[in-house]
Length: 303
Image 1 (tube, one colour):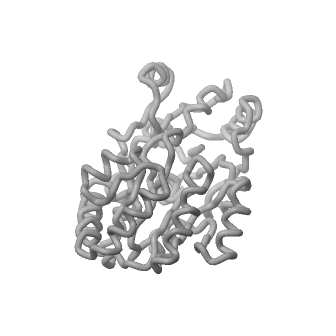
Image 2 (spheres, rainbow, N blue to C red):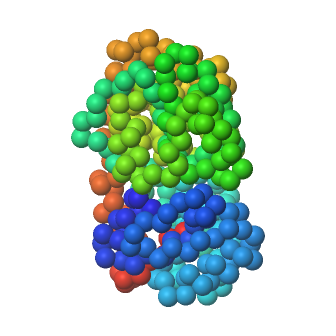
């Protein structure tokens, strides 16, 4: 919504966006036609929603491979934006039937700050959706353990309904601050100056979370689970730990006690993000590719 769709809107295209807005308590961005769908809707309901939304579209952009099985029979050209780990067989089959964008074509990207402040030592942040599989229980456990050390946790992002009571209770007793959904540009600014950015996704969550690039782009050291090891260790911009409360707390406290270490990690992450993952450097190529597949007409559909 804040990168691809914004780039299409800025290029003068009309965009219809299908997403579970209500489930995650998210307000759609201005300028799009929003279609609210149920979270994990069944195949029939997903196909019906796609059929209605794609009726006047010139391009159908899909980010979830499960929706490839729910495509309407009458549809515009389909683009699958692959941002997750998938089997080579599935990728080959999709390539024969549809257009495909991979990270080699349009890399994962963020909006990199020109010169973010140095990392501080009083708070950690987590941006992005909050759910059980995305480590919300571990986040609350980490927050509780950090309070005696003078470190506060900021959670910035929409939450699944089943974990909202846990977050409200944690906030009520002073363990953390949960801000709910915040527009991307504001969320990125709120990240600046943090001691660490947390990415505690479990192995069932596909792909490298964009939040890791967001932290890097704001000069914030990353504490992540092994899913992001290649990026974090390659850029030397943070620490990779198991999905374990003790391990995460120890990493955060190590950063708190070593200002030079966190400053160096923040600087290396920022440099890597600016070199390879700054969205404005890739937006034009993405729009041009989408326009070519759509026949350079004025409509687009993102899912």
